[in-house]
Image (cartoon, rainbow, N blue to C red; front, side):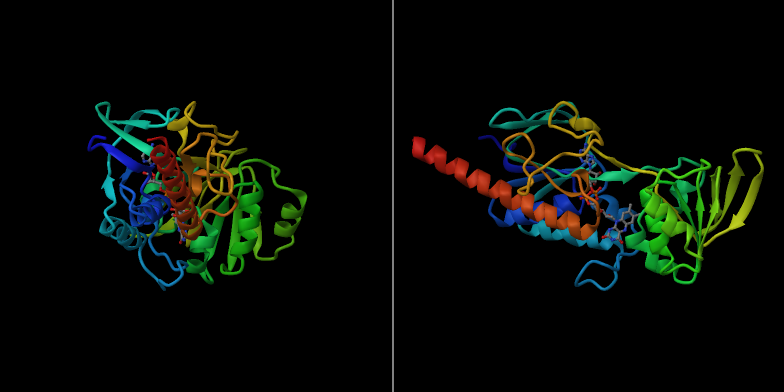
Length: 316
Ligand SMILES: Cc1cc2nc3c(=O)[nH]c(=O)nc-3n(C[C@H](O)[C@H](O)[C@H](O)COP(=O)(O)OP(=O)(O)OC[C@H]3O[C@@H](n4cnc5c(N)ncnc54)[C@H](O)[C@@H]3O)c2cc1C
């Protein structure tokens, strides 16, 4: 086999991919991680991580960097800031083309491309991500003790997370574009009965403003067009989640939401191809759940490769 052949190729260097890299390299598999963006994935968007067991508080960047160094210390190779331009996962040897020219081959592939929260796409949103704007109540709710916050959205996630955020925030205002919610009746009832929650219906945020941190928002009334300015400590946006799986269309089975269906061993519908982290169907998307998936996928891939090798030895 040539230098570009690996036992395991992992796509994505977020917590799931890096954990898979640690486990696969430690299992003495020649392992390569290919990553489109910055190593660390969504971790690098996270100002502070305070719920990763054993690490009281750190920045997402630091945690991602330690995972990267740990993977490399076991011999895992990591290539970042690249683009996967083609792939053939169907054969026994899987082929991945990068940047339209380099080809890597692998015995097993672990797909860990993560995902992204759907954003509002209005001015100031990118600037204040992690500085007052959040897409994860479990992750960031605790930073808003006694503060005044807005929740954007009208589905189950928005209403359930708004209720959970009242454990921390003094006041939660739900801003929703329609005159009714799309959530289940019990979620609507629970939010409506919570004295810390109020509602601004048929309205949308049109701009986020502040200096170092988010300080205020502009809200447009969709009936009258009237714009109001509102001082606010934080905004949580729950308007949907998009797995980064567009590049896998037609290569591996995806469900109607673009997630990669897997079994308990995190096997996809293709032999030797696994998926881990935020790209698979699940309710809770956290660093801990992603690293658990990375572990399972790498150990499953290691089992697959060892059994596969045994078969090859028996054939000789
Ligand atoms: C603002 C914010 C705050 C958060 N705070 C917390 C928190 O406090 N605690 C917590 O537990 N969780 C938190 N989370 C959630 C947590 O970050 C994610 O659940 C976790 O990062 C998912 O890991 P992952 O490896 O599955 O995916 P990701 O972290 O999304 O990593 C996927 C990687 O794959 C790469 N990739 C994507 N497509 C391709 C492709 N085609 N080819 C190659 N590479 C590709 C991406 O560039 C990325 O590097 C937060 C998330 C956000 C957005």
